[in-house]
Amino acid sequence: MSPPGPERSVLRAETIDGVHVITARGDLDLLTAPRLRALLDEAAGAGALLLDLTRVTFMDSTALNALLVARRSLLGTRIAIACRPASPPAQVFELTALHRVFDIHDDRATALAALLSLEA
Image (cartoon, rainbow, N blue to C red; front, top):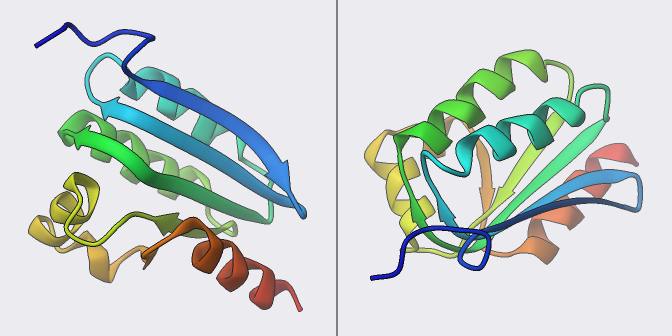
C-alpha cells in the first residue's frame, strides 16, 4: 500500500450555479482533514454547500470531525453531501448515525438539484 499523498487524495473547491462545491477524491484522513477543514471554512457565508464524496475511498474520524466542527460554523448554510451507497463515507455516516443529521444523496447531481430546489 502506498503512503497517502497528493497523488492519492485530491480536494478542490468551485462554485456551480451559486452553490459552493467541495469535491474529494481518495482518502479523507489525518493527512487530508486539515485541508478539508480549510475548504469548509472558506464556505462560510455561502448560502449552499455541496460536499461531493462520491470518489472517496477511505474516510476516518478526523475527516468526520472536520465536517462536524464545520457544520457548527456553517449555521445558516444549506449543506448536502453526495456519497455512493455502501461506500466508505456512507458506511461511516451510518455507523455514527450521522446519516440522520446530514442531507445525504446517492450522487452529485441529485445533491446539487436538492440544494438548487431549496433556493427557488
